[in-house]
Image (tube, rainbow over all chains, first blue to last red; front, side, top):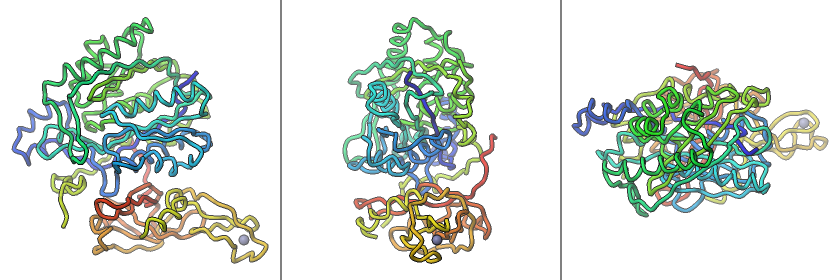
Length: 349
Length: 136
Ligand SMILES: [Zn+2]
């Protein structure tokens, strides 16, 4: 069966508290953090970007399992903040893990769900027998314009999933997607920051698509929320995934391990994938995990995943790379001025 | 640094790939095609270093050329890799005062520099303190 062979996540060490951003723009900090359910968010070091985060996540994945990198026949990196407009991040990742040159590679873009689209592409290639392994990564150093609502949550991080058929730690039984042309979030060529349709886009965007893909999965599998041990949803804030989980019949306990947004922020393409990584960090053989990503523009990908005995076998060394919880621990807090420097918001002459 | 010059060195910069002498096992970084100990009898093959080592000495760079100006101040160190060779590389620390001789470090993948806003971006290996990850 096609599934996850190994996985890794990476989160930069720097954080800014939302109350510090609110202080600079004269917003009420309690209203902001309360409304979003987010207290702080990650930001990259001065020399970190989507490519370096993708490489670190991929290397952590490969640290957990002995894989010949030359058997990785496909590398896909999903992001809305690729370092180059033209020149694939996936090539840099492929080189940095020793998978080049006999591999196919491409960068994916689909707002926050480009990484899960990469998982689906790898499932197809692996399932068809075209490649032994495919590597799918979601990585972002998300941008929010100064004082824009997005600035409170746009964060940095990523996760990598190696997809294959040889003794997976988790089987992916099925994937289902729901996609429409919805202008809820966009960035035009040459613009530094994305724009969005405002706070009324939750229902026609996030909820319509996440529920659409999730219900499609329920229909196709004949399962309901009760059949799962854990669920992970795209988390642009803490409120949306909590609300959609409740609507779909999931309990707060089921989404708890994968709900990392309160101290991480929204890592866009990394968000649902880091949530899945955090869930696999604590999962046991036999656990069933429901995942639904969301990308504005708009679409959602659902996955029906079952953890296997391999996650506790000698072949898989979960402790050889940091857990998401460990990556979130011991952060370095910065003020808005340092944050602006790290995010390149200060124009140098 | 020119794009072609960087291009040729991508394997050694990204993955710490040097060489090892097949007769005496000595390792080299940057890679050498010839072992000075074994002379003609020593053939070398590619060798990937584990990326762990110790700081031999370091300096704090407070004023740098344009390509690195955004990153000052930073720590530039000579690191003895556990396999033997010494490399010169940047150590990424929260505060430059954290750098110490004898400090254990591990390699990470970072941006080395960029040619302005429109030129190439250069990636490569830097080092961070090798401290264990903790849970809370
Ligand atoms: Zn020799």
